[in-house]
Amino acid sequence: MAMPEEKLKPKKEPFDLLSIPIVKKFVKSRWYPGIFQWIVITVFSIIVFELVMGTVNPSKNFGTTMTWVLWWPIIPIIFLVAGRFWCAICPFGKLSDIVRKTIGANRPMPKFLRKYGIWLIDLFFIAITYSDHVWGIVESPRGSGYLLLLLVTMVVATSVFYERRTFCKTLCFLGGLAGNYSRTGAVKLTSTPDICKTCKVQSCYRGTEKVEGCPMFQFPRTMESSAECNLCANCVKNCPNDSIKIEARIPTKELWGLKNPKIEHASLAAVIMGIVFVQNITMLEPWQNILSAIGTVTGTANYTVNFTVAFIIAMALPILLLLGTVKLASFFGMEGTVKKNFTLFGYAIIPLDLAGHLAHNLFHIFTEGKAIWYNSIGLFGVQSNPTSLSLASTPTVQMIQYAIIIIGWIGTTYVVYRMAKKSSFKAVLPYYVLMLALAIVNIYLFSLPMMHRV
Image (cartoon, rainbow, N blue to C red):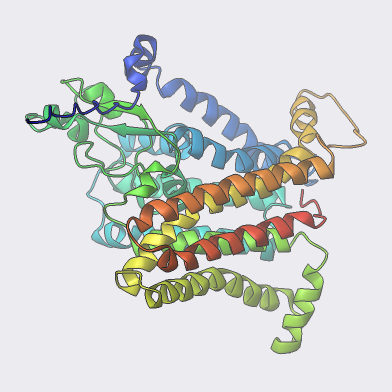
């Protein structure tokens, strides 16, 4: 007697935020993202003015406080919760749009930038981090202001000559970080394949008379990653077939089944972990001892020389550890070439990167957070001399940091598990050990007393 066929459960579709009528109406309106863009560009203008013209005392400067005590710490949260939404409202992006629409030549992006843009983005991010420690950009309102003005100049220059957001795509120092972190994001813009395959106009990419095409050169039908989608909703406005969706998803899900991993993204993930270590170590008491030890090798007490050595070591160490782990896993039976596995499992570090970045920078919010209020009211002539800028005690801050690192480690470990698929536990074990070791180092560094930088 034949057994009845087992009924398959229908696959649960991800929740589409655009299925909420009021959200869809707002996203398709001219108010999105414009209302946010103009608010941000107004605040940005005040910040730059205060950095360049305001007090040189970083703890009293509104621009320094808003940039390094508020904005920089919450950026990882934005990427985690809303993907690259920040890029949709970033003042650089809006400035680029204005320049291109008024005096832009809209030439095609140079082939050099198209091919090597991601490497330039990574290089600029590393250079800015390095220059902060050498020249003290964070501690210097003028330094921060001139850096922002330099970036504005680059935005204007590229927008005068080239199409769409060439700067954002290939030169913005935040691009690599945004791309990696947004892969862990809880939202994803996607399209409906059955609808898109019959579309002839491709207005999502090409644009219409009312709304330009995707500023980030993305085609929703073939877009496999959230890394370069800034949720500007141009495609939502332009699509004549109502194909575009903005779906909620489990954070880190995109990392589970990467279709086209790239070594430059994996390398950046490892480098960011080293940079997080540098950011922590330079705020600890043992830092001077480390510099002295390096000085005995270099034969000089010059800070720039010794910091450069420490910086290179910090960036290289996670890469070497990952490379050694890949080779050990291969010895234990992991399939695939060393390059392929290095590229793939490098992405697994991203959740721990994000956790380390967030835990480090939340230190500034919790220990210097009151400066946001006091320096804001200072713009209106209200003087204040608070005895403390802290929002929480040191033990409380440390417990929050530990919790964030543990959550990041769980996310990273689960990504390794999903990436490994049918590989044996023995073959995957080296990756688990590496991620645990990186988490432990982070927790240890956060357990030590940290000094304020602003």
